Image (cartoon, rainbow, N blue to C red; front, top):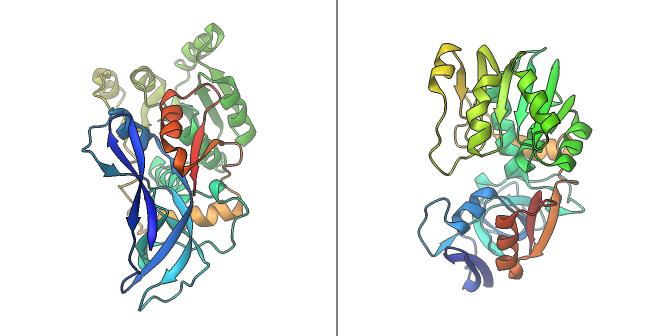
Amino acid sequence: MRSAAIWFVAPGRAEVREEEVPDPEQGQVQVRCLANGICMAEVSFFTGAEPTSFPRKVGHEGIGVVTKVGPGVQGLQEGDIVDCWTWDLYQNLPAAKVHRFRVRPEDPALFLAEPVACVVNALYHYDITPGDRVLLLGAGFMGLLNVQGLAHYPLAELVAVDLKQPNLELALSYGATRAICSGTQQGRDELAALKEEPFDLVVEAAGAEGPLQAAGSFVRPGGRLAIFAWHHSPRQVDMSLWHVRGLKVLNPSPVMGTDRNIDCQARAVALLERGTFSLGALVTHRHHFTQVQEAMELAAARPPEYIKGVLTF
C-alpha cells in the first residue's frame, strides 16, 4: 500500500515522502493515523537543540483507526480506534502494544493519550499526601495537564506560575487555587514571598534554566522537587541548597515506569474518555501533515497564543 511519512532531513527541514507499507505480519495491525501531536521533543530534534542524526522519522503521540488485522491478532478489528506512533499515514504496529478506545472520538486530535500517560506516570512518582501544598513552575501544555491531574488530589494548595496570563487563567479553570504571572513585578514579589512558606512538592515544568535554578528555594526541608521538564542543555543549580534542605529530587521521565506494573498509556486512554483530562482548550493549532514544515516552524517560534500543535492526516 502506498503511504506517506514525515522525515526530518536536516536541522530546520522536514519533508513528506511516499513509502510502501506492506500488509501487517503475524501479531500486527495496520493503523491509519488520524492525528498526531507535535511534542517539544520533536521541536528539539527539528531545531537541533537535541542532537540527532538525519534523516530520521519522528512522532509518538498519535491516534488512528485499524485498517487491517494481521494473522493471530485477537481483541482488535478493523475500524477500532487505537493509539499509534510515528508521523506516518499508515503504520504496522504490534497488536499487543496498541491501546483501544472504547468509543470513536468526535475529534481525534483531542484524544492524544501519550502526553497524558506521561502525566499519569509523573503523578505516581510525586508521592502526594492529602493536604500537600504544591507549586507548579511552568503552565505550558504539559504543565496544564499536570494541573488537571493534580487538581483531583486533596491538596491544601495548588499554585501555578507562568509568563502567560491566558495559560494561568486556564490553570485556574482546571483547579489551581492560585496563579502567579512571573513576568510582572507583582508576580515576582509574590514569588519572593512564597519562599517564606515553602511547599511540600514543587514541579518544574518550564524547561528553562531560570525556573530550575529557583525551584529548590520553594521546597520545604525534606520536601520533593520534581523535574518534569526535559532539559536539552546542561544546567547549573544550587546543589548546596538542595543538600542542606535534604530535598528529594525526582526525575519522573516517561520511560521510568512504576513499581506497580501499571500501563500508564492504558490508563491515559481511560482518563481521557472519562473526561478527567481534557485537551479541548490546549490544542491551539492544527495543520494537515503536508504542511509539516510550516507546523514545525510555528512550534519552534511558539508565539504567545501557542500551546499545542497537532498534525491531522
